[in-house]
Each structure stands twice: as structure tokens, then as C-alpha cells.
Amino acid sequence: MKITIFAAGSRGDIQPCVVLARGLQQAGYQVVLAAPEDFADFVQQYGVNFYPLRGDVQKIMASDTGREFMEKGGGNPLKSISAVRKMIAPVIVGMAMDALEVCRETDGLICLGVFSAFGKSIAEALDIPLLHIEPTPLLPTKAFPAASWPIQKSLGGVHNYLSGLAMLEVLWLWYRPFVKEFRKQLGLSSYNAARFIRTLKRTPMLGAYSSGIIPHPSDWPEHIHVTGYFFLDSQADWQPSPELQAFLKAGDPPVYIGFGSMAGENPEELAGVVLAALSRSGQRGLLLTGWGGLHIESVPEHVFVLETAPHHWLFPRMAAVVHHGGAGTTAEGLRAGVPSIIVPFILDQPFWGARAFAAGLGPKPVLRKQLTVERLAEAITQAVTDPEIRQRAKSFGEAVRAENSIGHAVKVVKQYFGEPSA
Image 1 (spheres, rainbow, N blue to C red):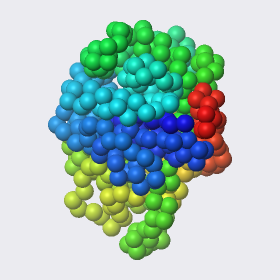
Image 2 (cartoon, one colour; image 1 turned 90 degrees about the vertical axis):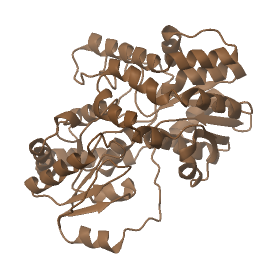
Image 3 (cartoon, rainbow, N blue to C red; image 1 turned 180 degrees about the vertical axis):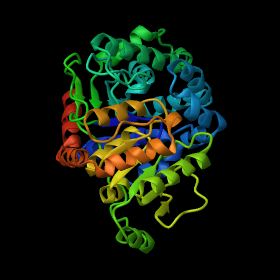
Image 4 (cartoon, rainbow, N blue to C red; image 1 turned 90 degrees about the horizontal axis):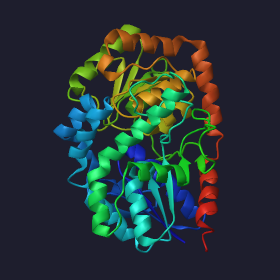
């Protein structure tokens, strides 16, 4: 059986799909991962068949429009509509057409839930079964507010559920003109928000997150499967430089700080806040510059700067981890068993900060637009000195590491698509 996985977005969106593809390949399926062309090297290094889609996500996020969105547009759902449309307009329909082409020789399609309208259109046009995967919850529930909803505290079940419906409407509005164009090219009937939401509710989904942080809500259907996190232990043979080894041995475990691609409009100012907060809290720091989320010019002796390093190696050696709250980075922090300090920028990041805080796995998150030296220093101090937070983080990490997430996911795929030889 041939399966195509259709994914786009940041590395946090692509990575779980790589893990799933590897698991399905090991189970005997023929799998191809269709993703934006700039992820070719990343995907292929893990032995996963890759089909390039038009579009370079890193360039989009690094553009003026992308930086403005990260700084200003991501916290307001209504403002995000025009911003997202502007960013994706040059590539999204072409990307979907490319995905359609690779699916012509496919027996089943697995699609990121946020691209459900495109995945459903492809499945409908080619008459193949569809399954969703998502690293962040999508369906409305009374159990918690929707990811990307501005109010990340429970105001009751009605509020929580309505926030989920509202965010699905926003998600639909991001893509509506492009879905309309795509379906017109395929000769399909018109699509609307009601059909989009109905498809999400009725299509089986792999929730690639831990039931410890997101227990299966009672108002979700049974075909929404919370499988556990999909971890990719990249660079298994990675070795730290002698300089990094010496830094780690020279004192107490440092505090990790990194914001991935979330540079915003002023990465120099953000780096200044980070360095001052480390100094004020009296902690050593290890800074990861990532895609440009931090820009460091003068490095003090108690700080070590890296461009990149695998989180699975780095995080367990830290006293705490400070990051933006992306789904993948949050998962790595929780697995490591150390306290998480989350500084959300946009979209679902406040949601993950709220979930980690509610579970007692770190201090209260500090929104990027509210970040100050004092607030970050206070959060760092609490994370590294509070024994209850540290013990809860340790225990949670042990539980996450014991999950058989991919084994669970493969069973779900077999349930809906059939055995590999079918």
C-alpha cells in the first residue's frame, strides 16, 4: 500500500510527519512525504522518500511580511487572516497542485489537519481515504480554550467550545480564496466553513501529543486518537564540540534559551533582554541562535552560543529551557524532564505555555510583547529553584519517554487504511 503524507509549515509541523513516515515504512508501507522544497535535505537524511512542493517556508518567515506577522499579527486572530493570506498567496495553490500530482499513485492520504480543506479536495478528486495528523489540537472542546485563542485560561465549557469554533472559522478564512481556486481547477463543488469543520470532526486524526498534557476530551469522537508525541532523535551520532563540553563541565547546568525562527522585528533587542535576565538571575546560559531568533554580538563568559544542536541531547543537560512554545520544542522540553519557561510569540504558542503551566511544569508563561528583563529573570529563578516544579517536570519526562507513540499511530493507520500488503 502506498501512502502520501502532505505537510507544510515550520520544522515543528514537518518533523512529526517524518517520524510517522519512518514508522509506517518500518511497518511495511510505501510512504512518500510531500513537503516544501526547502525541507528536502532534512527529510531525506532519515531515509524517507521526499516529493518537493513549491514554496520555501524559511524565506517566507524571514521576509518583511513574515517578521511583521511574528511580531504583531499572530496574537490577534482577525488580523492574522490578511497577514497569512499575504504570506501564502504566492505558493499555496501551487503547493496543493503538486500534492495532488504525487497522490495520483497513492492508496491513502495523510494530511496535516490545518490543510484539511486541501487534503479533502485531493482525496475527493482521486477517491482515496483521508486521515489527519496534527501536533496541536484542532477540534473544539469544553475541556480547554482553543489553541491560538487570545484568552488562554478557562472561562467555562461554553467559552472554551466557542473559542474552538471561532478559531476554526479563522483557520478557514486563512485558506478560503485558495481552496475555492483549487477546487475550481479540480472541477469540484464549492466548499464552505461548515463543510470544513464537518470534515475535521468526521475524519480520523492522529493527535501527535501526549495524553499527559492533553487528555482525550470526553466531547471528542473516538476516531480522534491521542497517540503521544512523535520524537525524532536527529543526529544520533552528534557530538558536542570540545568548547561546549568544557563549558558544561565548568559549572552548574546552564539555562537553555532559544526561540527558533521567531526572530520578530528586533532580534538584537531580544538578545539584550535574554543576556540581562541571565545576569540578574545569576545563571549560566546556553543560547541557540536558530533561524535568527536571537542575534548576539558580545558574549559574556557565563554564556555559550550555538547556532544549532539537537534538543534531545541538549535539553536533559540544562537546568531549565526557555523557548517560544512551538509544539515540537515544547514536547522536547517536557521529554527532557526539566522545567519549561515559555515565551510565546504567535498562534498556538500561548496554548502550549498555558498547558505546561497548568500541569505545574514551569512558571507562568510570559508573552513576547510583555517580556522584560525583570519578568524573565524572575521566571528563570523560579524554574531553577522551585523543588516542586523540578520534581513534576522530572516525573512528567519519565512518563513521556515511556510512551509508544508511533506504535499506537501505526495501529490507527492499519485500522483505517488496511494492512501494508492490502
